[in-house]
Length: 72
Image 1 (cartoon, one colour):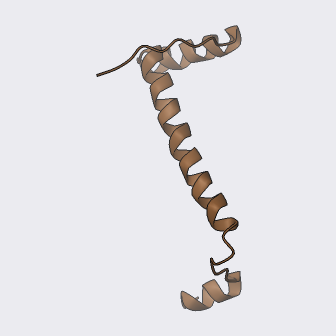
Image 2 (cartoon, rainbow, N blue to C red):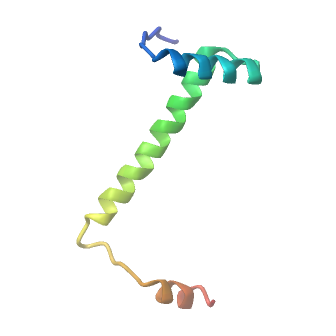
Image 3 (spheres, rainbow, N blue to C red):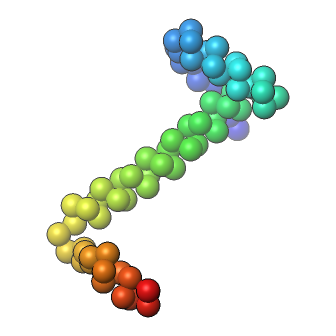
């Protein structure tokens, strides 16, 4: 199932979107969907990193300790 969503984009972004769509022989919708999937995956990774950064119980190690643990 899919749902139509309407967005307003600046003209220059639409031109770039159309260029990518033409170059890849894909639709605007496909390009936008893939861009949103990528953004949301990166956003989720960022949230995990920020949560760990602010978790006082999460153990931090130095680069030297990391190398040593990896036998480098």
